[in-house]
Length: 254
Image 1 (cartoon, one colour):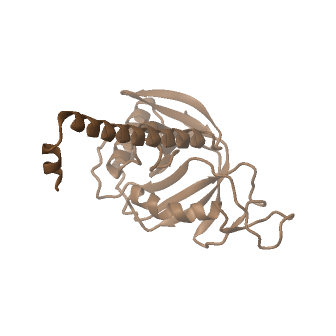
Image 2 (spheres, helix red, strand yellow; image 1 turned 90 degrees about the horizontal axis):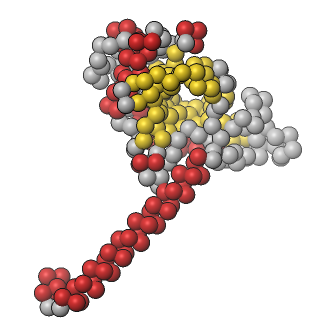
Image 3 (tube, helix red, strand yellow; image 1 turned 90 degrees about the vertical axis):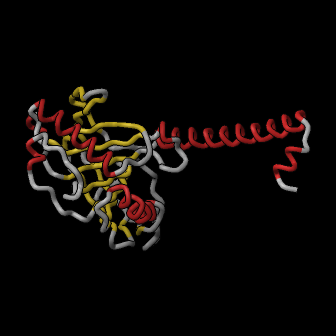
């Protein structure tokens, strides 16, 4: 008996009961999905993040461009042969995550030689790359008049907890993962919700930042664009996910 025959042979009361069951299952699944998402969201918000001070908040349409001064911190970084920052994130995430979760050699003198160390997760996941020359770019701020690059590599990195320094941080087993110190710097960033941003969205947000900086007489320091993701792209609902696009700026003129 097919579905059409089954429903045609059923009374209105039976159909109502079936619909109630389907509706109940849908509500239950939605509730479980939302509950898991909220749990993941709250857990991610408790992770350690690099410390910074907000110097200015510049109006940019319906958004704001935040000028932040960051304190130094360490990252575990790998370079991916991929110009698309969104695609590079998927390729580089696993290598950095493996390092954090134990694919390393501990520098803790209390541990056995060559022992592994499971490190605490932090946020955000960082993607750093340059706008490639096959993307449509608006001629706005002076920095945009510079010829676009043909870069095909993107750097993916995890922030390392502040309990470590260059002497105590575990050494990566994977030679493609490097420990890098990020010096004190000033950054202009926009924040928005949603899934991991597409390359077009990244370009759009970078353009917005550059236009806003130009109006304020603030100079972008490099052609690199940074994308920060603070929540997982699978469990956390998109409307709760925090994304940022940013550029380095000259802190002396802020």
